[in-house]
Image 1 (tube, rainbow, N blue to C red):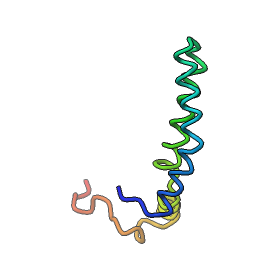
Image 2: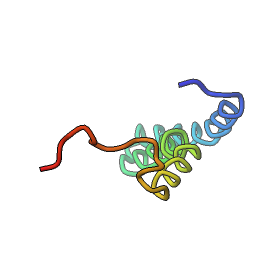
Image 3: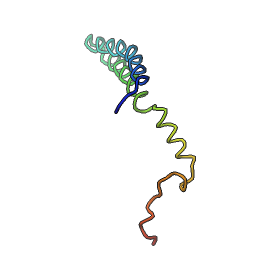
Image 4: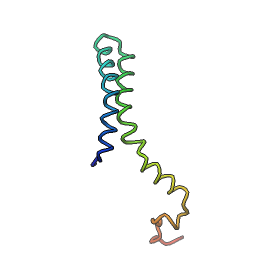
Length: 85
């Protein structure tokens, strides 16, 4: 996956906030507070993964338009080559 300049700047900004949270989670894990450490580590990972992979604006817009358009206008026609029974 190739990232543009704005995508890289967004990722760098997210990492500025996610790395300290994840670092504090690792510190808590090593100190013996497993639940708090694992939760903070999960939050740090989610701060990077969710916006990058699941909240992509282009993917959301394409999914919304695909759901609103009738099947004839979507560009893909489903299973027309199989005969009806």
